[in-house]
Structure formats: structure tokens, C-alpha cells
Image (cartoon, rainbow, N blue to C red; front, side):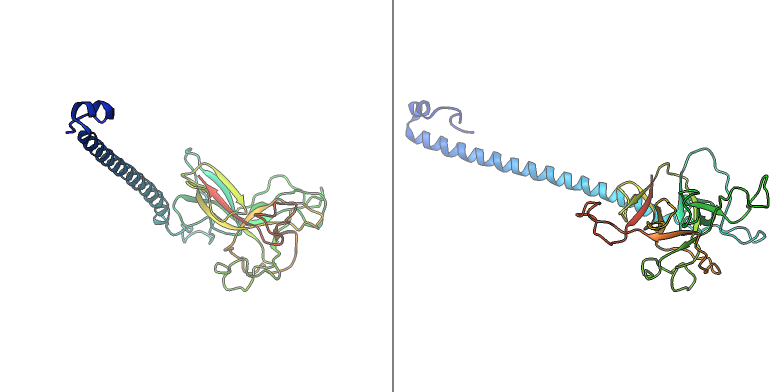
Length: 287
């Protein structure tokens, strides 16, 4: 315990015990301040350590949630053997919502038990050389097609065409791991699947990205595609899976609705993030 309070003025201390006590009190006060500062630094270090532990736990929890998605992967459920062969499965869904999206380029939605394939088919749309018709791609079912009233003769002159990959000279953009041994997907029909993520409710396609925002689930990534800008017809931009399926036997250049890779045009787009001539990536996310 100090002989005098550190708050006493030097003159008051000197009056009580002389200059020796002034020096002693000053030294002891400085030592006390040093001890307090040392303790404060220890407290600050402890707070930083707790914060680091909390951040590490949050990161571990996030990694655990993402790993759980991978652990839940199960083989895709094929149709029973006594029914015609097809990868498409029709499901009745309970009324708990679900995120819907089209997986362009694939005949399956994925292996996760959280995904249901509503139906599979091929992409279609208006002819690329015509000014009229629709401006969007459709995923058309190839099984159980039904008709209502119809006339066998041409009436409206408004037709729905099939689709083809137009990637000549760009063979390295799309993997052929799911393409049953072919060298390139060029001129093959474009498959598609309409999917439902059962435990999620929102869907977003993000161009120029290959990953999803935090807490969003990546369904697939690929490349942005559309019709050619010099063609008469207009189409939408869609995200086509970079690991497409290919329907063997559909290699024939009949054109119709066409799928071209989309490149950046720097100058009109910001030239910092976008570089002229580079193909635009994309990712489809659900939450």
C-alpha cells in the first residue's frame, strides 16, 4: 500500500515528509500505472482471443452446413424397371413450398435427395431466322406429350422449333464427361430439366459469377448463352450447365432455336470487371 495517495500534489507530500517521500511516491505511482497498463493489455488480448474463437466457431458452423449438403447426396432415383426407360420422374409435392428452376443442358436435376425432377426434355423456341414468334426458350417435355383440339394443317404460321448448341471452335468450354464419349456438343440438341429444391424457396441466376452468396446453395454453374446478336430472332439469356448431357442421335444441323456463348463488350459494360471477348460465366443459386 502506498504511503501517500498518488493524487496528492508533490508540495503537499513534501510538507508531510520531505523530498525523499516525494521521489518514493512518484516511483511507486509510476510502478502502479505500469501494472494497470499491463493488466489492460492482458484484458485486450483476452477479448481479441475470445473474438477469434467466436469467428472460428462461426466459420466451422458454416462449413458444417455446407458439408451436410454434400453428405446428403444420394443416387438419382430412376423409374421402376417395369416402366418405360426415362430419367424423368413425376412427383406429387406436399404444400410446403420449394424453389423452382430450369437446369439448361442437363437431363437430371442433381443427386441430392433435396431435389426433385419435375420433368425432363429438350430446349425449344422460335426459329433464329424469323422476326416473330416468342423471345424465350422453353423446356419441352419429350414424354407424355398430350394434345387437346388441333388441326393437322398449318394455320397460324407460328411454329415451335428444337434447339442446338452452336459452339463450333469453342469445344473446350463445355465438358463432355456426361456426353457419352462424344468430342464436342456442337449441333447436338440442348437437353433440360425442370427442378424443385424442396427445402428452399428462392432462386436466382447470377451472371458473371461461379459461386453463390453466403448462405445460398449452388445448384449448378456454367456459361451464359443466348441467340446470336446478328440473327433476326430474339432470345433470353440462360445459364447452361458446363457439364451438359447429350442425346445421342440428335447430331444434325437443323438449326431452329440456337444457343451461342455470350461475350463481354467492354466500353458499354464497365471495363474494370469485364474484358472484351471473354465468355460470361453464370451460376444458379437457391435459398
